[in-house]
Length: 235
Image (cartoon, rainbow, N blue to C red; front, top):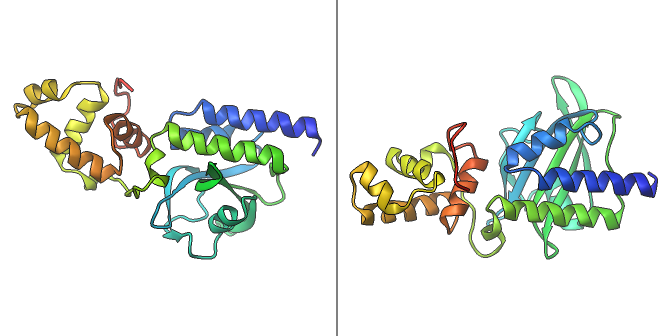
């Protein structure tokens, strides 16, 4: 690949990361981009927890690891890219059709914190940047994980797989109120509860989502699809 073309594609990819507000949105942008999405049939975003588990944060299209529990201690493309700090290449089969799969580690201060996986039609376009531009993408991907509320994953707190079943109906309702920027007192008055109860429930919500702040809780809930579509959010 020519240096100029590689730089242009790198800038384009970093721009797509920067313009995304969630893991699912990032995957969709990469998969449907006019240049980088050429031949793409699936993109996934993962974070690496302190338990050594690869946790999916976003997905669009075909998923080569669908239904699998993926560990950093197993032999897989995510483990390879995290260990080598380079792209890891493999293959998968979807509906009896072979596909190329590429994994790229996300870095924070050279520490693996996640990865992006792209599946494409066999023999199609594969973005394969060299070391200098690849490092820029890896760092930008790490910053993207920070931007959607995953700073705590590499700083001593293990992220928990969140789903609607992780919280009670009341906690889910409080989370929606939080997303709209309402204070604990306002939420308490609307739900006819004490402010102390709202604070206690908030702590349980943070624990269920593996975060430490209200803003991180809302960002993570949005990433995982726990908030209603069209909600007018304050964050």
